[in-house]
Length: 125
Image: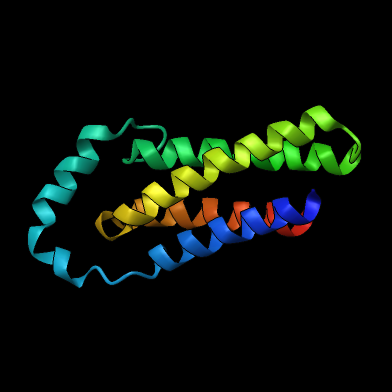
């Protein structure tokens, strides 16, 4: 089970990491729409992209539960929760990866920080 979880985490990290390195040169001509889209979805405490904020919250929850599982590896309920959270995080990462070319610098930094946390959960869990 742990090996499967590690593979799912690694897959999500790779999908998100590839999107983070995507070429966004085509989008430079339309900077005004990117700024407007980021401003419309933002709240001042969490950055401009609500989807990234939701993704980061889900990653944080997954990291917490993965650490709990390390302390109690026989907890079947926690294992089920982690499996469900991994699926959720993977879906969110895939959706964000499709839109990564439209991220501004702050969104990109927040997304990468969450990707790093997600990767460390897979490596340490």
